[in-house]
Length: 150
Ligand code: DQA
Image (cartoon, rainbow, N blue to C red; front, side, top):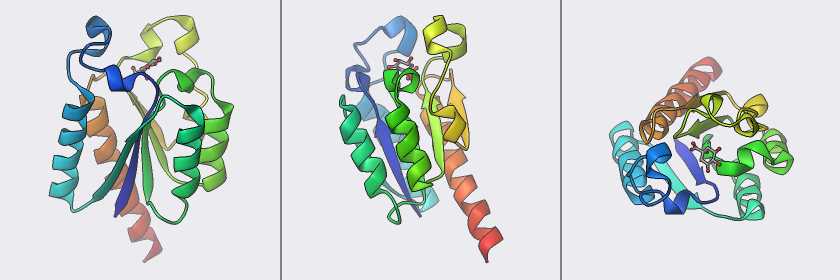
């Protein structure tokens, strides 16, 4: 099983960015936790971060046929990007949307996600654990889908 992990804009700043909202865990530490879980589950990960919407769209497009699922924190693009939504819908890859903060108890502009409507599900508000929970959900979803197929 292969899972693509995408981190959107400003997530490279985790650890020093608005610690009261996002905690003090760095992106490297999050990626290590994901790699540890992936290893235990026998799953292969490819992990990328970009501040550019086009990079994220390109990675999603290239995921067609190459990855079984997408774990994505779209960052601020969650609330703005029809392009990311269209890429996920267009490729038809099962996507799990994650957020460190609970976007539904923040500013009104963060309470709408363009991604949620094309995602399998969303995990929001558990800090860096959101990613680990999201990866578990992705693995379970792919296993379930494979069992139905066989
Ligand atoms: C975020 C929430 C977004 O609203 C914000 O723009 C981010 C991070 C989160 O993980 O909580 O950059 O996606």
